[in-house]
Image (cartoon, rainbow, N blue to C red; front, side):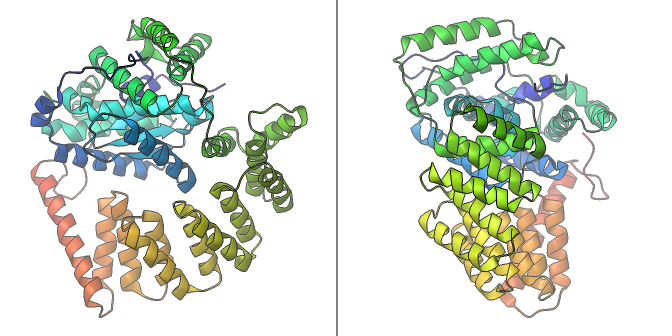
Length: 496
């Protein structure tokens, strides 16, 4: 059973657990309330605030650094965005949080965090899609901007700090630090502004349900999922989901959702193979490797599973994590025999070869799989890892350069490019690290690397010009933040 902490209730202010009202078959008629909000918080300010919060979250170490899970969430989000009739006007960026809490949250600027506990708990892809659709609606309706419209821009960083402190506390980090962050600089006052109103929840309910329907998902999944969350709350009556209690219409919303869903045609939607595989990978993270292995062995022995190949995949991944390469390889073969070719299965095959130090075989697997599934960028990362393990730096550079031509802000690729230049070219090494941090919105670390690059030897005019341009950009951002009072004169961010 997943344990919930009281501060999770505050994290849920940017979340879905207040319950939904599914829309009717026709698109909902919603008031255009975005313009008024944008007067106080422009799209540029939303993007700035979102990047700043993302930098804080990355620095906390709680973001799950897994290209497969990240790619899947963004693919699912893109599918919903394509299906929706809502004009988004911006790109979304979904990212996984390594956290057992059943939660997701939207940030300004289109950033949406999804806890691994939510992926693990979802009994079908439609349930997970309903969560993402709801959070996307909070963003498209500028609920955060509207919520902050009376706070003024000087409060933005205070609220950002409160959010990060809440996230940290909910995951069991230093409660004293979190409490200090929330109390300092009016943090508690800002905290009171974070709760979405019932009106906002209803808007997100309506748009989210319509997006779910248009995306060809099972509309019944939405009320079913939240009904189950209510049962979890009652079974753990320890004020863990106190946020639900602040919304007395929650039960009525779920009931209304069930009534609306009952009026829709029954639509059986099969889960995609990627969802099934990602959920098993997350299960390993949630249970821990030894417990996961026991779970999979029992499931296979008793024939108790929703997907046999996904269960074998989970066992293979668990055994690899434990260092049992022979057992992992055998389990992967069982998964491959029961599933059509899938990039996650091929990625695991390549990783097993890397673990066994059969770098040439790993390179072949990753290269051929990458050609077959060009959108699975993590296969290209694997090919580069295999090339670097063999000392093939020139070939690794060529592969990375082609990847960056398509995705110039790929932090994973820039981190590997830094490995190419490590101990060989200080200028390009620090530039690559700076680019990786820049792509992750970690401006302080990026500036430090760019400054080190500017001091390194080397006569490459283009590289130096690029580095100097980034230094000027980041120093200007720091000067603006200093004038706005967002950082102290010593360059350190003010505590919220």
